[in-house]
Length: 248
Length: 195
Image (cartoon, rainbow over all chains, first blue to last red):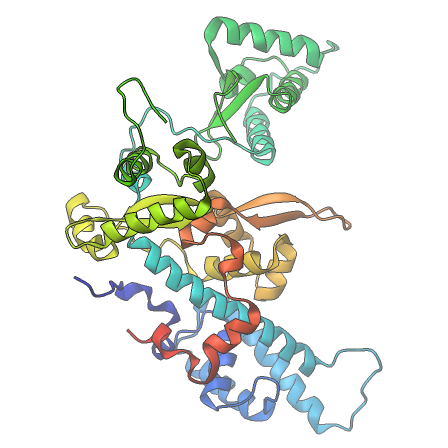
């Protein structure tokens, strides 16, 4: 019971399994295998080994085969350059230096990822209250506040849904945020809450939807309403803001 | 602190029972400051003593819970050794949610925040739209603004959920890049690879 629990399917980072997610994973593996210093790589040795791996295709992430080939061509380019007399241009980073720099950066990222993976494993073993509630999918509301970026995405969603209908008129009516605000407030007064998607669908024109959306954003900003959404692309529910209702 | 039933949190035991009940009811980590104020603790060290005592109690074999700190708060969780049994009882599998691309993306955001999608893709050497989207949905990263460069690209940062997910109090608990090199030096840290 005290042993750590490992899922056999999770060993993506296991060094022995020799699966290389991207070209840099393979390069770093070869550098380690040949006990080279990352700052001082013997490109020609690495290149031939790299190509062997590529030829066999073992452990190469098929999704990113193109990236593997791309890096192979960079390696060959560097190797061929080294055979030619130097024509280093001032102020320009040589492809070799660039490769090493990106490789070092990637090595850091890889190490942090391994660390995060370990931390994730450790945390997964600790169950918290909310983990159990996640199970009960039929909860009435899974209220989450949405950011203005998400609101904007949903708005675009509503408008694009209108594309199928050819009954949209562009009329000369002028809509004002003030009027819309009164309209929304009175609807909130009578109904308690608004389902924004339904509300917007019932409106006549894109302009009106647009104005209603701006109004909602403005009202959220002024804290006169709360806009809540269950998940991405779900409807936005709107309530009147009452002081102290939602902290943070 | 007295309420109508005459409960006074004047003894250590009573304070402990009060903290335990608050943590039990609260779904998310409770900020220590809130507890200190509520209990009327004279000093932080008094509060720390209470917490230490609680940790001691939870360490006993007869207890299934443990006291944790992360995301700037205190919360209760189950003990790690109960993981398998809980999986069995609740017939749900709590396992890793993050793929390697997601982990790499998170690593970049955590160490470089705020950072743009282009910067993430550049460092990973592969387009990272997918992992960024999925991390946004999991609320492990958030949009924190726009970078003031041509095109005004969105900037991404880690969230409180990120800290909770990895059991961190704050980002400074992650090892620095120098410490990271030491951590992995020589033998590539076999304990991380070998079971």
